[in-house]
Amino acid sequence: RGPRGFRGKRGRKGVRGPTGVVGPTGRRGATGSNGATGPQGAAGPTGALGATGATGPTGASASDRAGFSRSAVEAPGVASATSSMTIGADGMPLISYYEPEFQSLWVAHCSDVRCRSATKKAIDGLGDVGRDSSIGIGADGLGLVSYIDYSNFQLKVAHCENTVCSAATTSTLGAGSSATSLVAGADGLALITRRSTDGLEVSHCSNLACSEATTTTIDGPSTGSFNSITVGADGLGLISYRDDQSVLKVAHCANVACSAAAISTLGTAGASTSIVTGSDGLGLIAYTGPGLKVAHCDNASCSSATSSTVDTGATDVTATVGADGLALIGYRIGGNLKVAHCSNISCTASVVTTVDPAGSTGFSPSATIGVDGLPVLGYWDASANTLEVMHCSNVLCIPYTRSR
Image 1 (tube, one colour):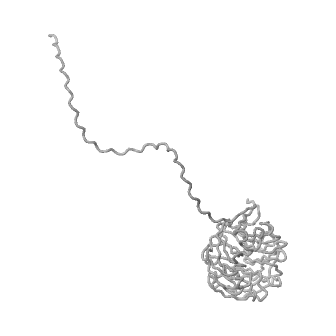
Image 2 (image 1 turned 90 degrees about the horizontal axis):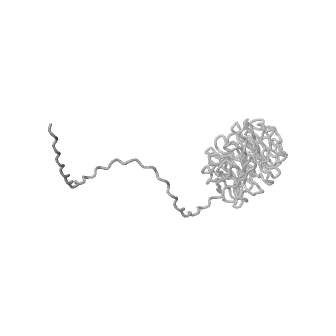
Image 3 (image 1 turned 120 degrees about the horizontal axis):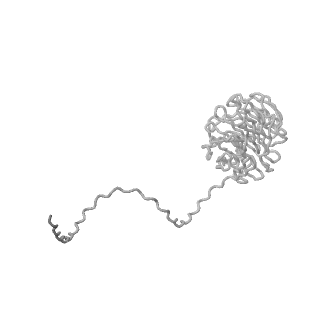
C-alpha cells in the first residue's frame, strides 16, 4: 500500500450576506391572569368638616328606679292633671291630655312601649276643650277620644285619622258638664258616659267616627260623678258612678245601645271609681271609700257585690286587668303613686307597691297593659309639673322578682 497523500488546504470562509427584512408582527396572544395586588398606598389628607345638620326634636326625658322606668311625655308645666291612656292598634301607648296654656286637647303617640319618646299633636283647640278626656280604640283600629268643651259645657268626640293620631275629626254630641268615659261596645260602636245637668247620660255612637249618637239619661239629677264604663261578658255596658250623696251606684245596660239600664246601689264612694271586666266575666270596681276599696260583682248585672279594703286611703283610682288575668289598680295616696296587684279574681287580697314616691304625684292615673304584657300607667306629677308614663318590669309591678 502506498503512502497517504497530503490534504489540500481549506478554502477561505465566505463573507456573510446581509440580514433579511423583518417579517410582519403576529397576532396578540391571550391576556394572562392578574398579578398579586400591591401594597396599599398612604392615606390621603382628611377632607374639610361638613356643615352641622339641623338639631332634631327633644326626646322625652326618662329616669329609672328598680323595677320601673319613668318617662316625661311633656315638658314641665305643659300637661295638666287630666289625661287618659290606652294601647293603640300598633301596640304603642296612646295618651289624651289637656294642655292648659292654650286650653286644648292633645294626643301623644309613644314611640316605644316605655314611652321614652313620643309624637304629640293638638287635636282640638276651639275654646276651653280637652278636660276629663277618655281615650279608646274603635273597631276601625283608630283612637277615639271623648272630652268636655268647658266653653259651652258640651260633650265632644275626636276620631283619629291615623294610628298615631296626628290629625282627627271632631264632633259635638250634646250637653255635658264633667267626667266622661268611653268604651267600644259589642257592636263595634262606642258607648260614652258623662255627667250632665240631667244626671248620668250614655251616648251610643251611630258610626265609627261618632259624628252622631243617640243619648239616653240613665239616672236622674245629682248623679253621674266619677263615672266609668266597661262591657261585661254578656256584651252589655256596665257603669260605675257616684251620686251627690256619695253613694256608689252601678248601671247595667239593658241593650247594646244602653237606651235603658237597671240601677243598683253598692255602698259609699268617695272621689273616684274605675270599673273593669275581670277574667271571670264579672265587673270589678275600684273606688275610694274611705280608703281604697274593690267591689267584685256577684252577677252580670252587679245587683250585688263583695267589697274588700285594699289600702287605708286613696284619692284618684284606675284599674285594668293584667296578662295574668288579675286586676291591677293604680291610685294616689299621700302624694305618692301606688299600685295594688290583686292576688285573686275577686281581689280580696293584694300586693301593694309604691311606684313613684315623688311626694306630690299620681294625679289622674290611667292604667293599661302594654303589648309586652306589662302594666303601663300615665299620670300627672305635680312635683315636676309634667305628664309621666310609668312602665312596670313585671306583671306584679313590684321592684324585684325572680323567675325559676
